[in-house]
Length: 126
Image 1: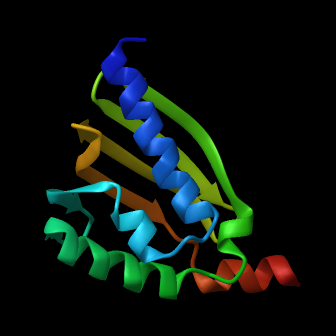
Image 2 (image 1 turned 30 degrees about the vertical axis):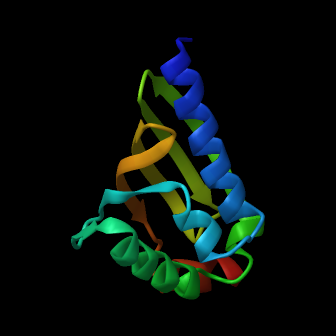
């Protein structure tokens, strides 16, 4: 691994810890560059203020116990780019993020997830 890959992996792992240890939105957003871009299926969030808004909404909408059920399936790093795949049990069977890191901060991120329809959860509970 080159030094860039080492830094990239450290930033992504720190970002995941902030989420998993429930340190709050401020800790999560501190990993981003001031001018970072966050790409979701619905829109592009530009800058820390907009990214903070995304995470405030995202954290509020997470299923109960989602953090406890989060599983990191893979982490791949190539220089300044990292890609993770993850799941949250059957509620969110597939999620993926791609990060670009520069100067020790996330400068760009893509995010996508598949949330199982509510009917799937009712069938599983039966």
